[in-house]
Image (cartoon, rainbow, N blue to C red; front, side, top):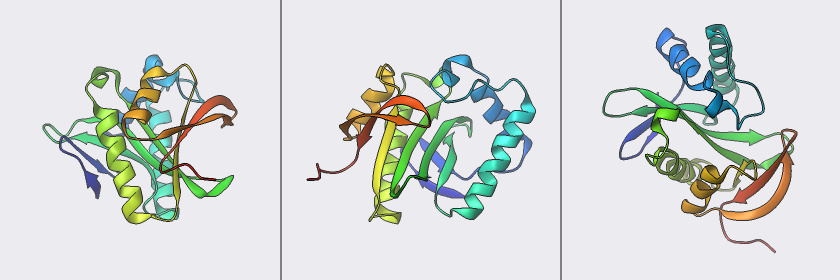
Length: 173
């Protein structure tokens, strides 16, 4: 099921099939992709299957929210994931996220899709604040956040990691 599209990409729900599991494994076995995450790279296809099953369960429990595959319109290749996730400690906030497979780095995928996630959030969750977090030294991710109009909100600890936070919308007083 397609959630939204951009000029070059579709963002849809994960499916419980071998193609989606293989794509997930290809992305997250890469140490360069996984170094920014709170967990090590995948070392087996079964880890990707478990991750996909968790996403299917999450999709059922939180309609309209989750981690979703980014699909290239030109050839249907899954090139990464985008997310709009609930934040357990902050029920009024949603986390915007993105991970892109290394062969697609530097092609504007994260920027294009993150803008799409913001539009999706504004349409489906207009009363919720959208935030994005990354490690302080992840310059590429910080550039994406700034390009899509998020503003720096300070340093924080997120999922146990020292992070920086960016927020959508005007400053609050």
